[in-house]
Image (cartoon, rainbow, N blue to C red):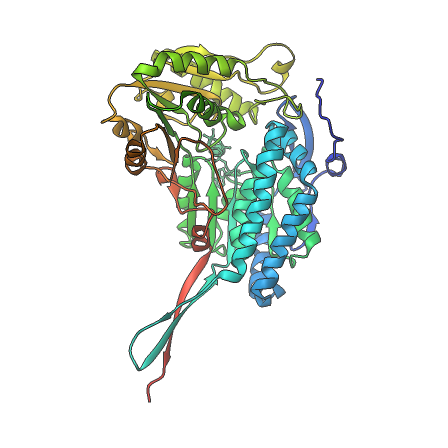
Length: 499
Ligand code: NAI
Ligand code: MG
């Protein structure tokens, strides 16, 4: 397939050293079983690399290493400033290899290179820098009790942390997890998604190079159920699990966590309402709707997958939106011109196609897309940008997470009950409102039950701003100072100072 990558392929060396190994206690080792699995290029269905298939025994080793590093290693004694410096060095190292990371991410996940270059990699760098700064800003308190006692609190790391991440933002999710966990002095075991293990492994190499002590960061590639993921979630010596992925898996993780009542934070799915009022800047809202659903091929937990349009603008909006969706350039991610790439895997492609069938059977009608592209692209896991009109909020296409480039468009007439409709869904991760009426915007922002609300914008992120869900979108907040809470314990110390 002809691709027009204008730069040299910088991740070639990394890809030729195979099979990829596990990072345990500062060393790269094969899985105990010797097994490997394949990770593919979703644009072509070709195998990119063989990767060690870590399992329960490997998790066992990684937890031992992380425990040892937490209790006894130099990490525990290192000053906060030194911890921060390591994170800054890591951020610099990623930045130096930015193009290589962008290419590797695009090859493994499928996303357009312009997105890897301008979103995933720079956001990863900024996340590490943001948390590098936090290392020296952690504080306890002194509390006014009575004259006989002095009380103070210590903010301590939770300990050994398991982090299980998905395939939609493989490198960035690793940064969201590592940044706050390491800034606060924990040791970690990361289980990357089996579909996209490569950038986390390359990150592991840089973590070793910049000088994190052995065992502080361990990376075990492998599968979830009855495998590495589950072994981590059920482990008695893991103090906390941070998980991002499907709500169904989230429930499994919570059940597994009960063995030792480890702490859990969950960032799960969404079915975000993207609400456009007739008084909005329509062109801006169309752009927002496009980004909302087609960014990263719709494989975004906060995707604006339910588009509510106020009746008076419904026809005009839909026709302009459809036109723009049809003109998105679809192709392999490595092509500089590509605006929408393939889905991550055959499983996800099939899931999306089945939701397209479901929507048709429910009586929604296609405004565009709804099928795979023909020709060269049929080798990869591509689905055309798809818009369903005539959707009712109660339909499965409006209630369940498709996780693909499939938009459900729903007209509304009453500004009064739009919040109620928007909230009629099990998820609550995000939502957006488009209007020039400042009162309406703030009212809706307060009424929508979701962790993030965008007003006249979509998909805006910053490492300083918390992100997480209401309802079945999970609990705990990542990013910002809120993620510090996820990775620390508060201890109160009573000192008898009575005469
Ligand atoms: P998943 O939730 O099964 O996988 C995410 C991670 O969890 C992977 O690392 C996987 O190996 C691990 N995992 C799976 N089962 C596990 C278990 N029992 N114990 C411990 N770890 C386990 O998501 P999957 O199957 O890749 O995608 C299915 C659907 O989930 C998608 O179609 C989408 O709707 C949703 N999803 C949501 C994401 C989000 O960002 N909220 C990200 C990825 C998927
Ligand atoms: Mg799964």
